[in-house]
Image (tube, rainbow, N blue to C red; front, side, top):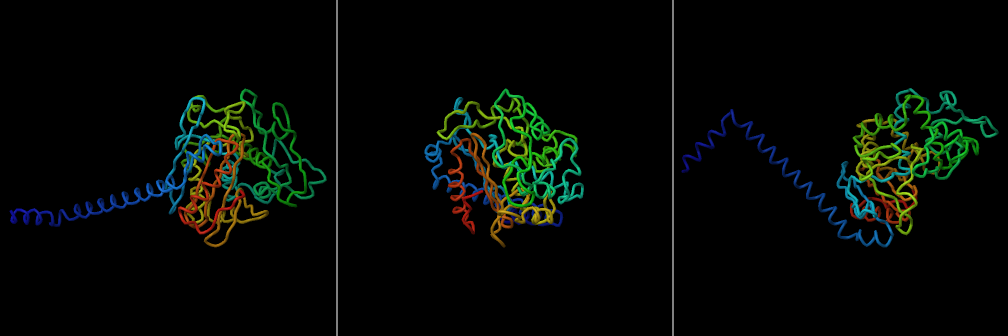
Length: 393
């Protein structure tokens, strides 16, 4: 018996077979690592679910559904949805259920214009009237300083604040040009300056609609098409779209929006024409890929942004705001974030610049903001974040 075992060992130890043995050892080692990492992920998610009573929180906050994605060690650690996406038909929320991203649309859209800036195709500090064709910033008493892309991205261009109009289902959707000129069927008036550009910070969705027109005129394509080609597809955000009205075959995948009491609104959701300001349908997993793009670009491995461009993006200008994102902290604790608020939806993203950690939380209720903040704080404790997340986005 021992002689047979020795013969087998001798045969396997020959020069011809040792590479096969080595490959086998490497494969087994890889499987052990994968299994270990998978169990670690399950452990974190399980611990979160054990310590944070999701079902009770959904009930107490009148939020039908919440969807979460967590980034740890430079990758998506886990993503999970809880609750009901559509109460009327009891469709449960899944990790691939789409929510309105609200103002999280702004930093995602910013990537498209930053790509043009970093390649020298557009100048971030030139007067935008120099490359706009169908619409121009009116020369008024406020126009002593030019409107630039830097000012638009950092909300210092001088345009109006407040939520952009949302359109009832069945209402015709205006073009970007109609929005800016206040022409029918737009539900907003003509866009005008309210103060001297660069004078102060004033959060403005309207300013991002100007960016929408600049991109459409540059690429000669609808925004939903160009953003898909230049941002969503490169980042593999496969469950994301800026298309309105929502295609019929997508209706079963979206989370309907609900009011502060968790009851139905006049419409399951409102259509958005100011796409850059708040028109993205997406999932936390896809938005986590956006966060990872920022973090990888900081390491000079971005798919869209270069390291110099992302550093400029995350440099605070006014009111702790960079080019599309709110920023804070310093050194290893530096972070970027953004909040989102549409009728029936609340959401947030938070990520560290250099630590490979972050989170995305999306809800389908007007009362979802407090829940988002509680979940973010719970994640911070679970993953031992070096700082407490901000309460304002």
